[in-house]
Length: 85
Image (cartoon, rainbow, N blue to C red; front, side, top):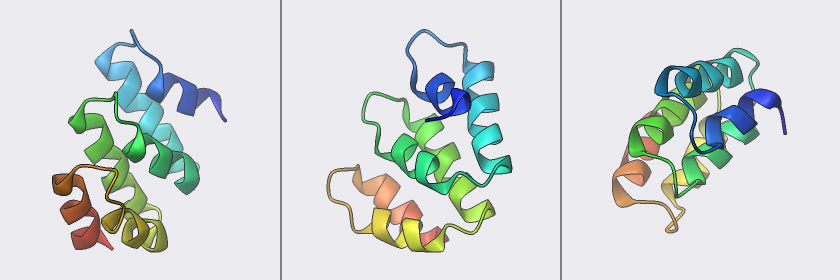
């Protein structure tokens, strides 16, 4: 996994740096890593939602549809994934 991904999911990272890392994943089109961020249960919802939005921005509709059906993530994230898919 990339340095941006590691920054996005690592504990004790400043909010701004975590947002920037997610934005780098979006800019590079790393849809797989963005989906993993969404599935990472220990992250605050704001970062997971940012990753969902990023998936939509970089053409990850297949992954969004998959996330919409994934019962291991919170219902609100599944609903948003379905809206974006």
